[in-house]
Amino acid sequence: ARKIIIDTDPGQDDAVAILLALASPELDVMGITAVAGNVPLDLTAKNARIVCELADRTDVPVFAGCDAPLKRPLVTAEHVHGRTGLDGPILPDPAMPLQDDHAVDFLIDTLRREPAGSVTLCPLGPLTNIATALTRAPDLAEKVQEIVLMGGAYFEVGNITPAAEFNIYVDPEAAEIVFRAGAPLTVLPLDATHKALVTTARNDAFRNLGTPVGVAVAEMTDFFERFDKDKYGSEGAPLHDPCVTAYLLRPDLFSGREINVEIETVSDLTRGMTVADWWGVTDRPRNARFIGDVEPDGFFALLTDRLATYA
Ligand code: BDR
Ligand code: CA
Image: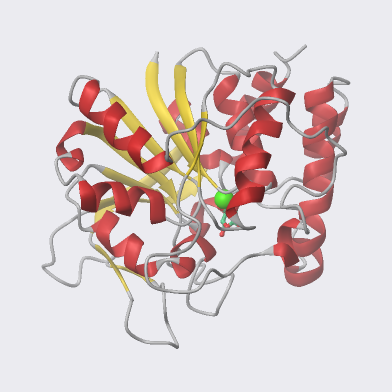
């Protein structure tokens, strides 16, 4: 199985991304590292453990990481995810412990211990933990197999400001470090994730699984959806972060281009914008595989099939 570390700020869609990974025998989730993002770190570290317990996977170690962006105050998204970050289902507080190690130490130690090119990082939140690890241990850029992250936008522009997607906006300096690190990088931006919409029929398919996981995912999506339906009039909630997991499982469902992507860190107006050279109008070096499209029916079939494997 492909070894991955999920770096996350759950978040209902992060939770679904984790559940999809833990249900997939092709993936070996070595650990989950929590970062401040959708809600503060104490809640994201708690929510990650709630999700592991829902999946009956208390063997997966969960680490707490950075509690604030590198250079800026934390911006959160309770307006999307609710006060807990995981509003919707009523799930018990976790009994499993947090690991003692800091998430950044776990990232560095694991990538240095494992054979080069054998561990993939899957960031689903602001890139603070990953950038801190790369800054402290620049050799990680050569050790990592790939970084496959959810963040950014090009044609779809922004969801937290007119110019920027939330994960990149929250910690643009961290994003710049990650995008310039030289590691193989695949980016799932809003251009792809805004096509992975949970319609009523798709959400019914989760609920009709009739299992604790199926019902919890349906309730998470019900909650998360309120924001997108009201705000954008879209068909249903976009399942942003599960696109990362689905990409690892079925890259054939996605299409994109190898392009240059730079991060805006100076302007207040366009802070965190992913300046994506989709049309190749500069000669700046290609540093990312930027995904522009996903095949939604295949994505939801995969997700529903895998969630169905939970008892
Ligand atoms: C991203 O921001 C968060 O709110 C979601 O969990 C996702 O990672 C989408 O912009
Ligand atoms: Ca997230």
